[in-house]
Length: 226
Image 1 (cartoon, helix red, strand yellow):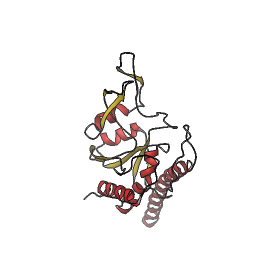
Image 2 (cartoon, rainbow, N blue to C red):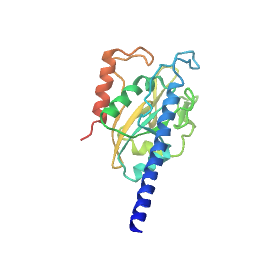
Image 3 (cartoon, rainbow, N blue to C red):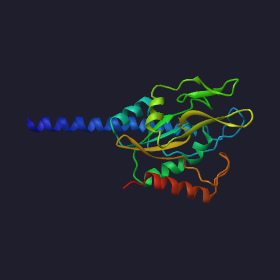
Image 4 (tube, rainbow, N blue to C red):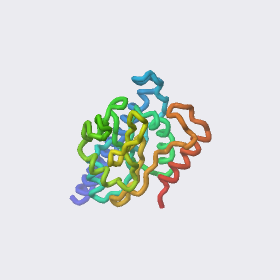
């Protein structure tokens, strides 16, 4: 009887592991299909999306802002990527991000989508300048977004707008930009990288070997933790 019980327990454990793997694999395939679906297509401004090749065993797992907040409150240690398949800067670094993550044995990177379509905000607050040139909230961000700004305050950059005279106006708020890769350790934000080479001046320009090597150095340093 004990042997039967032990066998059933092992089977249930194996099934649970298998189900978990299938769920994560679904996210990886979804990520691959979504990013590759835009290859060589045009955006609303008639600009060509960069063609990318995404591995089917990439580490991305889809999450909402609120789910990330809960992980922070639980004092978890993890990597999270804020981006969009429509973001040209994201598309210029995503292949190297995946490659460096694999080389550094990072199995999971949580993925929070920032845009639903080209420049369509589905995560963040949006601001506009009123007639007096003062920033006002136009639409509020999704649940959990303001909490993320609080938790990530030490690694985020200031959010500014530019008025008609090309003057910079502060919103008084930090901002999650695209792409932002953030490392959280025991619920505390430790590091943030965007991943782009300083030599890359345009989001859609062809990447040189030198640019790719600089991306690799950035992501290797980011993902390599002792």
